[in-house]
Amino acid sequence: QRPRRRWDSMPPMSQIAWVAGATGYTGRALVAALCAQGVTTHAHVRPDSPALERWRTQFTALGAVVETTPWELAPLTAALRGCAATQVYGLLGTTRARARAAERSGAAPADYERVDVGLTLMLLAAAQAAGNRPRFVYLSATGVRGPADGNAYMRARGRVEAAVRSSGLPFTIARPSFITGGDRDESRPMERVGAAVTDATLGLVGLLGGSRVRDRYRSTTNTALAAALVRSAADPRALDRVLDSEDLRDRPCPKDQ
Image 1: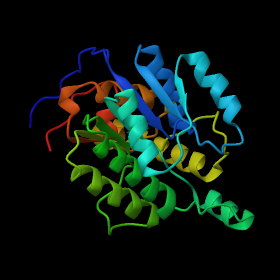
Image 2: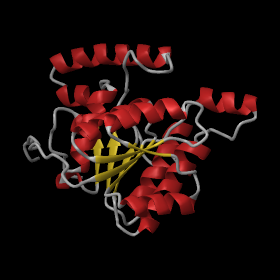
Image 3: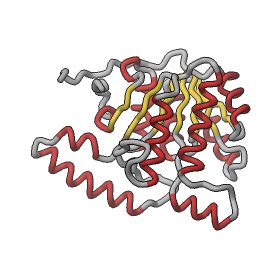
Image 4: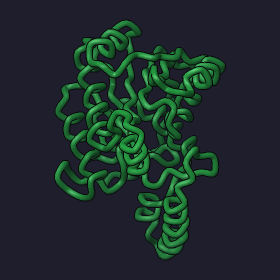
């Protein structure tokens, strides 16, 4: 096994990023991180979002271009082609609570099949059709094994990973563990408890020599993850690779796969 190396500082010069899922917990941190690095950033907000003007104000203040392209293949393709995106970030995801709320309200379905899989695959198809071969950066999750393995959430992520790998586009797939923090819009108490218990257990594992296991499964913040995504999207050594949680910490070089 090769010794682990440090990534050099590689500011993403002359990059144009298109962020789907920009209003999510990691997405908003990613938009801020990209803008801070001087990357021309297009932050996508659903045109029917009730908070559209708030997001427009927030993202514009950061220096981002706010996109309200409808979720249809032809407009998405035109948007990606028109801005000449070099990086397309797929950070789309829903929760069972949101899916139940959409069903109760009579809104469009918002389950894993519709959002996590359907919209991400539409974005991937638009990136393919745009013609300029942007790098597709997909936010997956620790524990994904394949399209038929695990619970519904893991199977959805596995299906998208398989599609990204076979798309013919340059890609980077990120598999972080728990993404946690005190400023989430949703409280997610079970997730916070799970992250705290896991981190405490992994701290002991690390003391006993299991630093690799600790680094793979302990939680991360949205800002730390966003910074890692920006670095990896601009680094040729992360091209066509799956980055596990330990690869997204403290700028290690991605391992061979």
